[in-house]
Image (cartoon, rainbow, N blue to C red):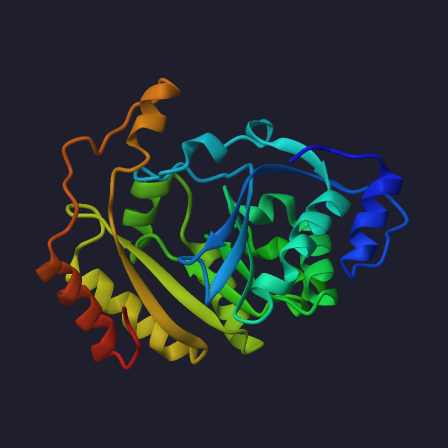
Length: 264
């Protein structure tokens, strides 16, 4: 996404229904997707932001881990580009902020979300929740839906998989429940890593008790990003792990359903 000067950016944003802003705010943007169908309801404009504190073994976007993996972009440019698709996505879809971990750039997220709401767009935040303490009331007020990716059901497994602690994510989940913010829980099923049914049952019980989890998406592990690990000289530890069987996927979904949750 090319940077433009401030005047032209404001003009474009204003013509798209967004008020001009008094000062430049820039964020590291990795890439965009203008016809996303897997990151929230309807057709989504997905903004992938650079930077992530997690190092998930199955990550399919290791090319977003560092901020400098992206392009420093004024928020006005981002909003002007989103505005150009407004008529297309407002009727049945919206905007999803993803990454990387979008909350690495919480201030930038807040500005983008505020601009999106000013355009009347549905907004979603796709996050691990590890930096949930950076999502203040003002940011969350402009989020319609949180796609919360809880990557493992036990603290030991979570740390083994991601390199960080599970507690901040659990705290964020509880904070979202306290304000009754809509959540779609995401769970990536990795054979040998996240397929322990006792741990999944524990997570299902926790999620059901929150009261604000609208659905659970059980996502099968895949290797579509494996080449990115090789390209960046990284050690890909799941080379011999195969995607889960349909039978295992259905068993895990049934585990969430047994707790009273809608699971896909």
